[in-house]
Length: 326
Image 1 (tube, rainbow, N blue to C red):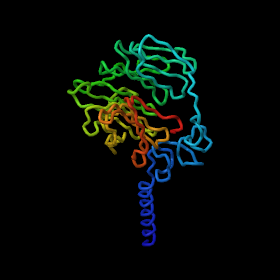
Image 2 (spheres, helix red, strand yellow):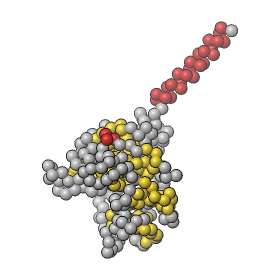
Image 3 (cartoon, one colour):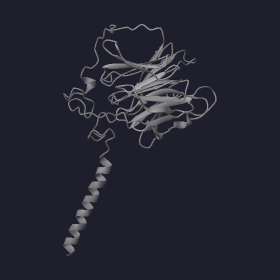
Image 4 (tube, one colour):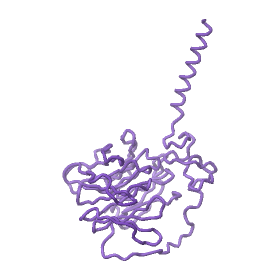
């Protein structure tokens, strides 16, 4: 009887120990089945095995996109097509498959065109004011449009441009405006960067919307920042980077707590981008009179070091990565 009891106790002890071991060693933030300790791209799900473990590999040959030649070595940047217009375009985004582009303009329209031919496929007038920002969801299902003249964001089905949830409020108080939009890569969340429109008014937030029902998930406000100019999701959707006035903040999308503050920028962070392999963040800064120009900076997500900087004599307004993150 005593021997049986000892065996039972030993079995229970081993089961508990193994369970605790899994909790300690099984961290896999991007959900690709590879522990972070062995994952070369912990912020981006992938199945590469040849050159890097667990990094994006779009053609499935085992070599990560970073080393698989997605970027032309000597691009000609030849103009494929040009469209003349009598009005200003404010923003543009691609569909996830690259087949279409969506633009927003001063007439309040969102227009979808074939990316190869430029032919207009469908359009919708979202606002009578300028449509200043537009975004296409990572799953291809949605398009979001906003204007800095109203505290409203509108979401449309990409396949027919019918409105999904009516007017989505971006109102967080007096004197605020929408400054950027970003969808999560799985299309389940929409991030709205909100900031003051002047020197007074409310503090800004990054409002997170549940795309399935239009409800507010969270309103993170890292460091009590009064303006958020830009926002982007990590490829794993486990974090966002939000650009403020002289800082960029890394925020966990589970707890909505700030996990790191990048304090290197010297001016407004006009745009941010997270590389498809999750290894780098690009920070695009506005004009700094003390520097006599602006900076475009690259940060490593492994240690948040600023490993590369480019200087410009004018403001940096937008930034993005190629598919291979180079």
